[in-house]
Image (cartoon, rainbow, N blue to C red):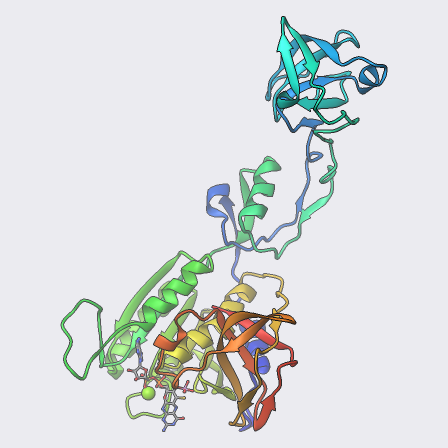
Length: 403
Ligand SMILES: Nc1nc2c(c(=O)[nH]1)N[C@H]1C(S)=C(S)[C@@H](COP(=O)(O)OP(=O)(O)OC[C@H]3O[C@@H](n4cnc5c(N)ncnc54)[C@H](O)[C@@H]3O)O[C@H]1N2
Ligand code: MOO
Ligand SMILES: [Mg+2]
């Protein structure tokens, strides 16, 4: 590898290319949220599958109303979930419920608020809007037709997509196996939150930030551990975590310190380094590799802002790639005020969102360095600024990465 550091785009491309594909599994509907589809879903029925009544009221023949009739004998009741009734006579109507099939012979539904009923006769109220043909009817097949492609392979399943699969009558779908992810903090200074702290110790916060992000993005097969800066312990614990997981996310121990053992241990354990260091701030010492069993290993710099930024910029897209997800277009935004980039590195600048005359834009919310994670509170994510020295003007369109 040349000595030139990769740019963030090059590092992301290397991760997408090298991230090992997870196998496909069949999961039940209730377990699909957040998974990536590995089959395409074709509609087995028209949607809606029948002319669906959309208001509780009465259904009748529009022509009959057009011919001057505004009161109808109620000939029956059409409930949701019942086979369709047939209008016996053009002078009749049928009481209908939302979700019912439109009775045969009817093409007009008037809501119950717009009628008066007495002695089994429904009278249209004078102050009600005039009926319209096919009004309050969700026509069969108008949303999609049988045989239509509803969801392509590679699509990420959120609530709407899961509803579409369920409404297609499927109990399961073929998706990428949810990755087993272990999150590991390293460092002798770290203490479990809630445990007594010496003045020189700090609470182990990165792991919980990483877990919160992963859960927010739909990952639930998660575990975590802490390993001190100790070579034999690192070897032993990382070996066992590699054997049990698809993805390993480490924080700390990847820079130039005497006790930054992580890259060395990973390579001893047969994890092939794809890159170490990216031309970015924060998070320059990011390390990425692939284990001999195909495990994807992200060793994130330990400073808390670096950990979260690298997780968002690289690990989340890498996890998506490993599941076979179609790459998303990155959201772009402009700045509320110009911003000076000093280092010859890409800069990840935390932002809040604000409204300007030109629309929504990003307000810089810089931290006091990559140890200052309290400054991230209230930010939506960060924008990526090109390497300096330069002034990035307000009108520049910048990629926005949300936490
Ligand atoms: N001589 C150099 N020193 C450093 C360089 C460099 O290029 N030359 N790079 C700096 C940069 S940039 C970063 S980022 C850090 C990366 O450090 P490590 O990945 O080796 O992480 P540690 O040394 O273990 O810790 C750094 C910092 O972060 C705190 N930390 C670590 N883990 C956690 C955690 N789970 N929760 C909360 N805080 C954590 C740790 O206490 C340290 O303060 O290296 C610079 N140095
Ligand atoms: O760039 Mo390092 O990520 O702390 O500042
Ligand atoms: Mg270090």
